[in-house]
Amino acid sequence: MTEKNLADTRPTKEYLVNGITKDVSVEECIFDLIDNSIDAYPRQSNEIVSEYDGYTIDLTLQNNLFCINDCGKGIDQLLLKNDTLRFGTKTNHHTTSIGFYGIGLNRAIFKLGKIINITTETDTERSIIKLDASKFLKDNDNWSLPIISEQLKEKKGTFIKIENLNSEVNDSFTNPEWITSFCKQISIRYSEFLKKNLKITINEKEIAPHLVSIRTNSGFKPLEKEFTHKGIKVIISLGQSAEHFFTYEKSYNLEKNATPQECGWFVYCNDRAVKLFDWTPDTGWHTKFHSEHTGFIGKAYFIGNAGKLPWNTSKTDVDLNNETYKKSLETMKKFSEDWRKHTTKVLKKGYRPITDENPVINDLFGIPPQEIQTPPQEIQTPPQETQIPPQETQIPPQETQIPPQETQIPPQETQIPPQETQIPPQETQTPPQETQTPPQETQDDEELPTHEELLYDIPPHALNQNQLFESFPDKKSPFNIPLNETKLCSIINEMSKLKLDPIKGSPYAALFLLRAFIELSCRYYVKTKNSRINLNQCASLADQVKSCLDHMISSNAFNATEDTRDIDSLKALCNVSASQKTIRNIQYLQNTLHHPRNIWDKDNINAFWYSILPFLIKCYE
Image (cartoon, rainbow, N blue to C red; front, top):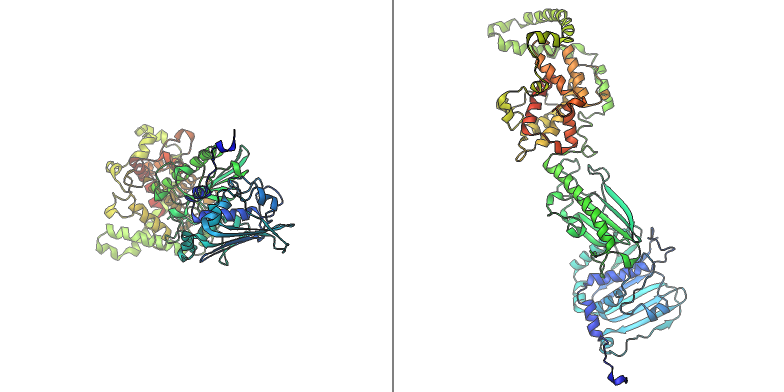
């Protein structure tokens, strides 16, 4: 076969260059050149670099001028001859490089401008390549470029200078807004390198890393998984953004809080960010996005041979067909779903985890728990003063029951109750003996009600009420809470607003506040009654209530004869035995707050409320 009968299948240079530059942006071309400079860092091993020691990459973006200069190891002449500028050669600087596909350098220089000069120096050689793109593209027969050798100048590294920029590029470089936006992209995409003391400057301005971090004091425990698949190391983590706080957290600030555009998934290949702030199925968010789910940061790191990493040729997106990425996506989906469920619990069910940002339960009175034991000892010195208010508070009921003319002799009347109160102790010495065997006595008179009857024996209309204070006059609180107890007043105020309907209300929030109010009430009772009860030694909230209840009974706060039903019902609420675990008692309330699927319906909340109410009222008498 003679040569004249052979078909020429060589591509034209213009067609080839147009094909590789048409769909790539100016930013992506510069990213490719930065990647090459990072790969040129003189490393000691093939592992990911942990410290760049101030290694610098300088970029100049000006009118009709682009320059990039690094102080790396340079390019030796053998690579220049056979690989560096050859279309499609997969140069592999090392196993964890970020330059792989062999088209980045060619694509960048032809996209940016027409006059190109490449100067590079190694320990032993200094080489220069000059290219006039306009002339080169018209000559389809000559694909080689001359390499000029020079004497060493002890300026190791690579310097690329491009002039006579293409119009699109020059328009961008002369636009201040574009420069600002580009600098921000550099700070995000190369944040992992910048954090390791790599320095990148643009027009002599050093770029700071855009830090994307996960909170350690969040109510959402950070998730993390690490594994290796087909030689690629994968590290996946997800948590609440360090810049995001829920409205119940004390550091919440609407103006400073992270927006949806500042949260989402980040995917890194050998530390190079290829996916940013993503909320799509590509990174595991498989449900419709709502702003209420804002606040998480997910990170997926893929470390290994560049040819096996899940990125596209422009390194601006993931390769969904990559087997390692497919396996990783399963974990990313699960982590995303865990966050979605957490935000739903917080925003729709009133979930309020206890953290440094939300110390509601740990410090309800603003004092450390260990100091709670001291107030009774300090208050023992002015017992006369603390006894006076009860005498004064006893007078108004007498005034409301006695005609006005009798209110002129309250001092005489107030001297009688002490005599009367001295008698009940003699009488109340026997009730404890009677209360030890109440079943025997009551069985003679009437049959005891069942536990459920005791617990749910409430006014019929109460089961239908949609707010806790709905049955009280003007829907106001029945508790005598001093105004200086601001936290107590705040909780009561919130409790009075919440509706119990599961669809239009917030039953979970109501339960959470009720649980907090019960603990507050126990501590208030201990503080104001000079009781020696040590709530810190109580194993549970039910034990705290029972300790206070026992003290109330022994101090005749309850009438042992008339309040039997209330006492028995309250004791039932404190029951923590296994046989009672499904009853709406205090322990089950605790369980519900940790397992929202056990949420109570409106009737059960009202039932519990009216059962615990006598105890709560006594705490503030």
